[in-house]
Amino acid sequence: MVHRRRRGCRLRADSEKELVAFVQIEDKAELDALKFSLRRQVPHYMLPQRIVPIQNIPRTDRGKVDRQLLIERYATA
Image (cartoon, one colour):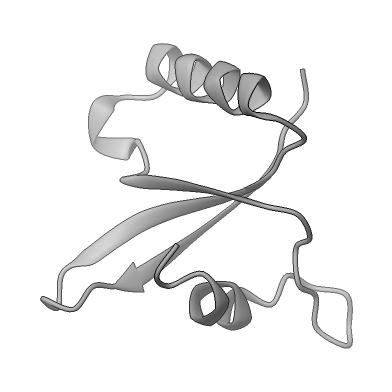
């Protein structure tokens, strides 16, 4: 199973950083499988605090992931 994963870091209102994973996923079952897989393969301190499913990953004019737009668009997700 391949997941197109993107992650970002954003500053919370209380000035603490949080790790946020933005994932392009088709359905909830796939999201649950990703969470299960991450818990088995990644140390707990490296797990994202939030996983945000999105439909499209925004890109810059050069085709790179627009991380700033991701954070702005999904800051409250």
